[in-house]
Image (spheres, rainbow, N blue to C red):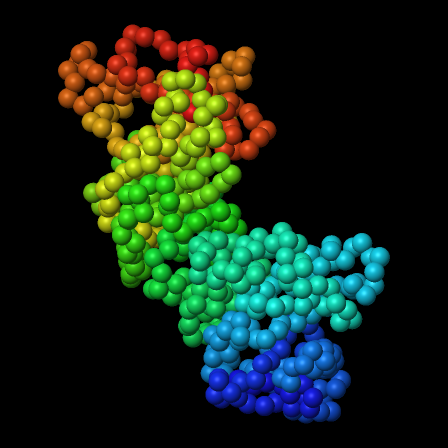
Length: 527
């Protein structure tokens, strides 16, 4: 490790880690006029550089605080050597973690504690460019002790004193910020969400800046572009069983390969946790999966829909909201049917879906006939499919994508053309139990290929839309069959949170085909 002597401003090499003295480390955003390794050794050249004045001020401050040595990323690495650069980037998280103190220099913050009376200090601090860069994420998490400084090196505060403000600005868990929990204790999806809004100058650095956070190493290949982030995920998969790595967003009506193309796709995955805690059977899902030349080979419980070509794969992770804990499912589709077990990811009805299990907090909202069903001991294992299915998830060939697009996305676009504001996505977590779809009302509202029922505007005064599905027991004789009805009702407009959207679903056993069901008030609920 190459350090700067804070008294002489000369480099000193430390090969033996055990002999490395306590050192201060600088975190900053790069600007024009930074000093390179070669320029630092030419005294005349470096003096005229803006970056030299920054490093000199940092070393003076570190020396005043009792540190004899310091490290800066701009001049302590010989970037002409690809081997040294690769070693440094793979080691940098550890270097920041092992530093005795980290000094954060914010060039765009022009007020500090020494300029008291400036009410915009907090605003400038939280809006600093430093919080938007990919490389500074590890530099915020790795060191235990951090001081923040404005552009005049006026003191702003410590990581501890600014903890709540930093948490609000970054979304990073406070225990992780304080070093009370390591990044490995959080889900991959959550860590990726911390990086989602950050940018890097080079596309490859979106991956390289995250190496230490996931405790992985890989060679640097500048010029590979977006492939670097794919390689990063492949390296993560080799050492973890955390399936939250697959919980990312993608554009509407899109199909994709198993792995994300950018950290930005994890922006909405901040509440994803590593383990599913409510159902014991789910907690025992074998976590083994692997990337192959054909795609992702994985064993998942599959939830059926009305279409044999469309299933939900249940991941071994969950989301935790204020009132519910939900298992996470991936919509998977194939034009070859269930027997093929080769799927691609589709963003219909969403890139990933949370299947919520009710908690006691919503019991008061349910009518009497649903109260018993809402008890947690009546959900858990029975709500989830028990059987694991070995499947392959991959990007399909161009021809297969065109076929699947017509089958899946075509009907969905037609639904939009019918001015459907809301659709019900119909799934069968425990299977169809020997039944098959017999009829739908209104028939034009149902699309079996996507297992979605459009809730059309029926011009009803209460502003709700209603639908009915009737299922017939297989093997029934004509006219003497056993039928079950499923009644659904939703509000067409709602201004509140999506999870609170007024809706009802009720199973009507021993359905009489001659019966009309309009959904009386006592039959409706927020189920």
